Amino acid sequence: MIDAIFFDVGGTILDESREFATWADWLGVPRHTFSAVFGAVIARGLGWQETFRVFRPDFDLATELERRAAAGQPESFAEEDLYPDARECLRSLKDQGLFVGLAGNQPAHAEATLRALDLSVDVIGTSHAWGVAKPSPAFFERVVREGGGDASSILYVGDRPDNDVRPALEVGMKTCLIRRGPWGHILDPSTVAEQCLFRIDSLDELPSLVATHNATHNATHKARHNAAHNATHNATHNATHNATHNATHNATR
Image (cartoon, one colour):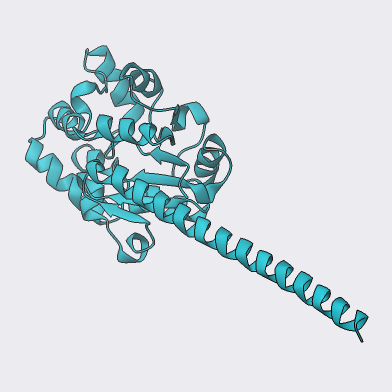
């Protein structure tokens, strides 16, 4: 049974293409070149920030973020960066009575920006606010606490097998891998993906998958409950019948 669903942010509900393009422009690198190098870095299993160091070996992210902000080009996202399927997916899941949350590696300003989008979620958690980042087990343990404490009833949805799926599985959560964005297409190890409850290409697919899963679970649970009840009832009935029969038989002897 799925009672709560948490979503990664970047690459899952937010399209980061515009931000990557902005970084390419900031570095003075053609956008297609930046994208190609970005993909190569990911394919080699390196951290995405290594992309910047290919073009500028002394690159420091914190320093460059300050420079961008001072230049009036702060790292940001807005309604236009939401994937078209994100808002409706969240709303549909809430309509099913599920607890819905966002939990991702995001900087200080992200939580306020996400709240301003007025999405259908119960909680928004960021690595900055929680003081711990993915793929640390502590991050996913926090997700479990926020989701009610039962890891097996929580589904975590993300685009990265390494940062989302694997660590969520390790703390006992169910997982859904969405194949989009650079990580979703470049990183897709079958050993991890095969352990996912769902694999999707669009968030449009998720509400019906969850509804079907929960309906099947409830039907199975009801069938088992009825079978156990009937077995107990029959055993009690038979025991009573046999006791009465034996008592009557003995009394007439």
